[in-house]
Structure formats: structure tokens, C-alpha cells
Length: 167
Image (cartoon, rainbow, N blue to C red):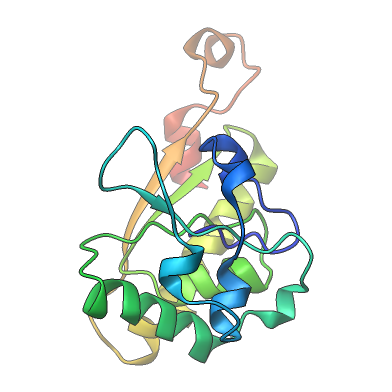
């Protein structure tokens, strides 16, 4: 599910941008069904994309609406895994994806500002997710470091893995 409402791009990355008819917001607002909005990948039998809206406001994402979509995907349609592509930053799309997460892969670059932002996201997962609110098993967290170059670390141009862990 692409949660980047207003700035969707998962459809572009997945090569299905010309096949988008309905989107996540259409489903939440009962303007389309999940079956109408899901786009089946042409190369992988069990992969579907639910695009974000390009034209709607982020406020159209409601907790009840997102919960219904996720429940329908798992309970009614039998999806074992639902990957929620969250936008950068802390806004409605990201907060919805974080709230319902069972497991999270947070990406960061080896730069102080990116690591600090990722630390904030991890803090939200541990304090404001549904699991945190209900005192359930914590969200399983993973930190994925992108654009890492050991030679730049040696030159002091980039944070090391140890530096990132300490932050």
C-alpha cells in the first residue's frame, strides 16, 4: 500500500502507473472496492499494489478507514503480508502506516539528520503504535542503512554503523 497521499510514486516504481483507476482513498471513502483498486503485478503472481491518491488531501486517511482496508486484505482476501510504503517525515500517511505496523523497516542514510529522523520514527513506533497503546508485543523494528560507503567512513565523510547505533 502506498501511503504517500498527494505524492504517490509506488505505482511508477512498480511500472503500473498507467493502470491506476482507483486508489486507497477511493476505497476508504467507499467510492471503489479493494478488488477495483488493487493492481496485480505483471511479473509476480502474488504481488499487488494499492496506490495512494495523487489528488486528495492527506487528511482523507482515517484510522478507521485504514484499519478496514488492512482487515479486508488479511481477513477477507487472505493476504499473508501487507507492506505499507510510508512517506518520509511524520505526516498523516506515515503515522497511519506506523500505527498499524506489526514489523517496521525504517530506512536511514549515514548522515546525522537522517539518523535523527529515523530515531524519531522508532520512538513513535514504540510509543504511539496500536501495539504500544494496547500494551501488546512491541513492533519488531529494523533499521536499514542505505547509501553506505565504507571508504567514505574511513575518510570521515560519513557516519559509521557504530556511530549510527550510538545515536
